[in-house]
Image: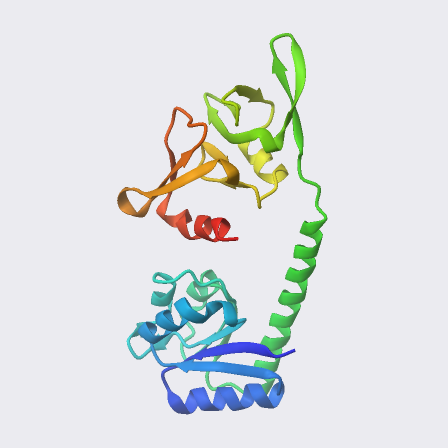
Length: 247
């Protein structure tokens, strides 16, 4: 199966050399494009990121640092950095970097980086497969007057914490105290159904009716039934929330 990659490099000779080396190492590699700068990379990634699997990226480009790309588009791909500068390694690994190759480089270094990518990819596939078989919490025993009653997770619109207590708000507009912390709930609930909006709220996908823009790049959620407090998504978590909603 072809490995689809993109090269972000402003030196044409280096880009061509990298392309030839990659295809010598693994002829099945498909180099989708070579991009010389930040602006071109942002535009291409916005339109084509889903078709790509791996990025090779220089640090200093024709119109800025490659890290500027990450502030303009939510890059979800792993990156192998290929650069002449050794003082950006920490930033690189914070920006999806899985390896850091210094110029001049040779085929053996590229081969090792590709092997590392393959190991990480295989491990990720195993984790995804395991997640498919993970058993998520389906119901909770909650206090209702002098009884304990089962409450289905599917009937919970949101979880809310205040004053060291955690409440479950149901689709029929009732509230129950839950004997779990928000962190425990986050681990036990199906992440395809529930999203940790902020420190106070976990929301169910089906309860979200509208998403509105708020101040400073944040979002506010309109859910049913509505809690007393506003549910805000921070600017930093907006990309993750959009990806979750778009599944």
